[in-house]
Image (spheres, rainbow over the protein chains, first blue to last red):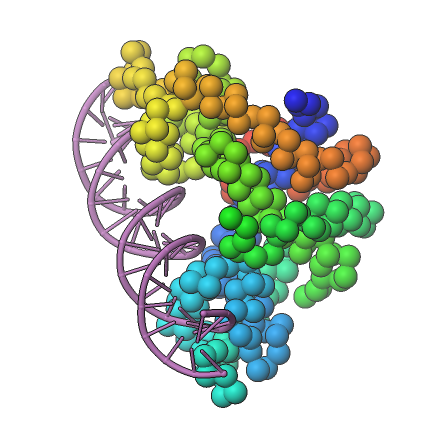
Length: 157
Length: 157
DNA sequence: CAAGATTGACCGATCAATCTTT
DNA sequence: AAAGATTGATCGGTCAATCTTG
């Protein structure tokens, strides 16, 4: 076995570390300022990006890397709080769309500046433009084509 | 508000993506080959790194970025499976040490090559040495001094 | 039967409360 | 009292099973 040398270990350790630290920080800031978790924010922004007609449950689950049941339950909370509504699809009555309520859109628009500001303060603005590009390129190599196990929440068995 | 431009968005999105994808892949590979989750592996390796006398629960929880109760429960499983033992501390009878059992050490030594191989295949070996150093440097800037909100001093060097 | 979505059982984490020892 | 660790309640996620529609 070829173990990790010092450079390799440093890169690996920091990647593992950032995953908790950065998300945790952004989550706490968003919660404190707007009472919305990062998980909720990601749901809202994903629905919003899909346009006015909303998004199929299946597609939403895939975007969020969530299992179908996981999505159902995450949506339950947002529906209960009145930020999202389920809207049944006329052409295929099996499916349903998740759409933002006016309240949901309002809350998202309130929260978005806080979120972007957090991403800037804790990540983007700490790096030079060259570092940013290098980072995106490197992460792109890593995330692309991960042996077929990427994307789907439940996959190879 | 200054929104994210294309480069910035790309870096941010990929960082978010990798957190699920890479960990998920390594977890599945480790599970399939040795029946050990990444979570378990991290416990074992942390105890192992602490040397033969083991590690106090509190210190272990801090290393793993886990709450005290979370650690108790994670250890419960490993103790039940015979990989870790709790050993009460003679000088302070409130505390206890987590130590590896011989079986635990054996399983860790079996799993380690698989783990390192996975880290190489899915991350390290996809990057050049320059990319690796740049990535570590950039992540170091991000992880260090995150407003003090999330314990753990970064292992900067 | 297959596909979209939900439900039941369970797992792993957290906070708040508790028990023991200092 | 305060500190180390565990326990009870609960939350958010997964898988397997289910229900409905195509």
